Image (cartoon, rainbow, N blue to C red; front, side):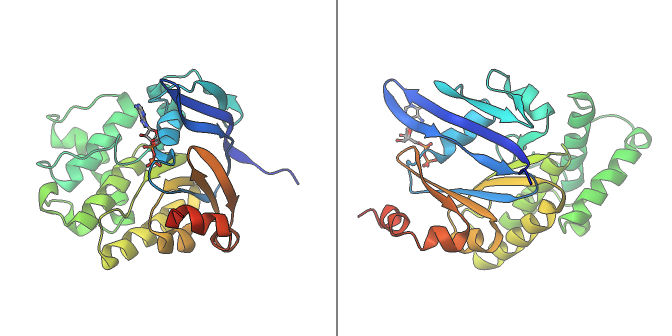
Length: 248
Ligand code: ADP
């Protein structure tokens, strides 16, 4: 049986003025999986994300999305194909309500623009869809809350809702539990699991407990290159991974 990959990179390289930040990275992201990209600071994780979303162009190598070469594409075109990065792209407006933020994301998806001042009647179907998304992420009761008043964990849940509004096929999550206390970490981890049911997720995550709980497959980067890859048990038992994390 052949494996179905939603995203593949071949020998991806990114050099910054002679410094190799990403060094021959080949990734195979299986459709429907949760794939984690881990590694110590400076390993190249953010640069890989920037290459995949086309915020940066690779020095060498290729990126295939559903078998199509997207190496030379623009960020907006890649996002339209369904490869969407959460948090950076979907930054929420703090002084709008939770519902308004999701509605704006839905309008963006439909028309690449939004019309905040349209009459409520016109907006009604969008409100219904927005409420459905808020329900999915456990925020329905906060629909009318001003975003700035949400707790940190709930803001992240809202960011996931605004990303879902764009209907991603491959969702890139950049440190989704960063800076959170235990309770919020658990809520967001459960949410990621839930939204992964009908899409693929590639995430950079420092919390190894979250990685062990969620990731089907893990790629460990070190100094820009792939150190090892496998499921959590395989990767965590690898002495080179322990070394990389302890920095010895
Ligand atoms: P990580 O996300 O794993 O912490 P990064 O991808 O941010 O790692 O960085 C990898 C390496 O590339 C680091 O040494 C960083 O200093 C370097 N780097 C990242 N962006 C740039 C840039 N725009 N110019 C020069 N060096 C960069």
